[in-house]
Length: 506
Image (cartoon, rainbow, N blue to C red):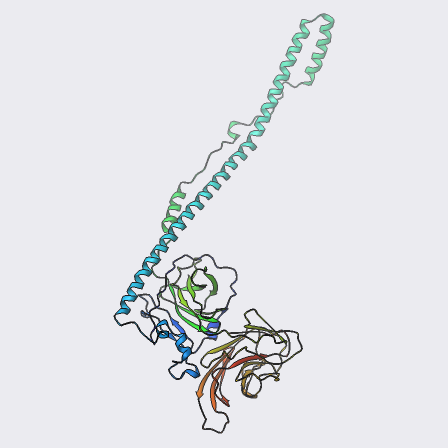
């Protein structure tokens, strides 16, 4: 089935530094829990990509048991492209290149306009920042001049004041002596006695030490004109216009309540150290960081069904601090209903989205089931253990054909599960093969495919055979699961006998 071409929009914004923590989804969970046949949005590659150019996007989704071999059931039609929903109509062969050319021209014009705006705003901000920095440096230097002037001129001012005081005192004493000489004999004797007494206490030949002229500070401004050349070189090298980012989003795969995003390098000369993925609800919301790391795929959780989201990615070169330009944003959505645990179960506390279950301190035991049979064959069901409590051999995480209340574990008929000690149970019987014990951060995935529909020609009992693959800690077990009757979808569930266990399902 061919869908109309998907036309992404280029946003060449230079990304700001990432936040300290990104915790909206799980790194590496995309690879461990990727759908073997989920709905995929193949993203068009730009021209010049080494692995070839795709002119349009293909969308693939696994057929559910009730859709038949070609997957053309009612849900398949609803989940397809607009052309498929309208009755399977396709664009005429001649119209496809024209549509692709028009979309490419619009993308070039829009991205060029946005790039001009980004450059103008950046250099305007840069000029304002540089002006502030120069003003601040000027104020600092002027304050330094004032400080040196005040500290060095004070001793000279004190010396001058002391000399002027001594000269004034001597001048007053001379006048007093002249007055004493001009008076009568008796009066003259008294005045001369007072004059002699004052003169003996004044040291007219004592002056403060005056610094030499060569020792007096002489202020000057030391300005290095070479800074202009340095700044000029940096300015001429600052910024660049990239026509193609070194990394592009390659594929979007829908999952219940999430979308797996995969990306790849499109520049063979670029060595990536880290990648940075952002997403947003279309069209008005700002982009948010969702992952920073070295993986090339990531599952973004908390995705609302049938709502468009945009994704973009950039990379940081080996040994570099700055991020590359953003990739062409790609739009995708999930048509799959999110997996949710059943509410109101006394022994478990649920998150607001009901995809995380925490075994609380309540004494009631039993199996916590999904709210509905939302797991379909051909998908990948993933459980991630966030925290652990005390393990018990009766603990279980798995899937079942139907809810059966009254059981304390999924280790029963019509169910497959793994215990926290790694033991695998099929219809209540423990298998010889075992997986590693479940620990904090462990991811357990279930992949189930229909092998036989209708009566089986064997004596094993059961009318439907399903091929089950359970993976955990880079190990997996594969076995056939026999059911009494065909079922289009399955329930999932968990049971823990001690508190502290927290499980996320997606």
